[in-house]
Length: 117
Image (cartoon, rainbow, N blue to C red; front, side, top):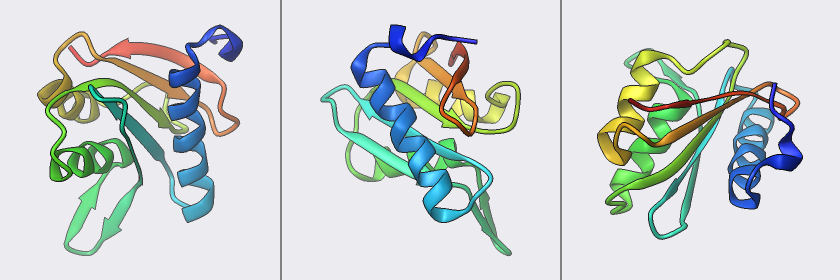
C-alpha cells in the first residue's frame, strides 16, 4: 500500500479524478490519464450490449480522440489487485512502456504502481 501523501500532487489529482468518476457514475472502475501537456481525461467503465471498455481503456481513448500524443501517467480505481494486461497495453500504446499506472482502492488509497510495459 502506498502512502498517498508521498505521491506527486499531479498523481494525487488523477487518483482523485478516477475515484470521483467511479462514485459519480456508479461503475465498477474509474480512471484518469494525464497527457504530456498536463491535460487530464477521466472516464468510467463502459458496459453496453455492443461495447465493453474498461475505465482505463475509455480514458486512453478519450485522450487519443482529443489529440493527445503521449501520456505521463494513468490511474485506475478498482477492486482488482492490479491493472489488467489489456489496460496496461492501452496505456503503453500511447504513453510507452515506462508510463506509471497507479492502482487504487475505492477509498483512493493507492495499492500499487506498475508500469505500462
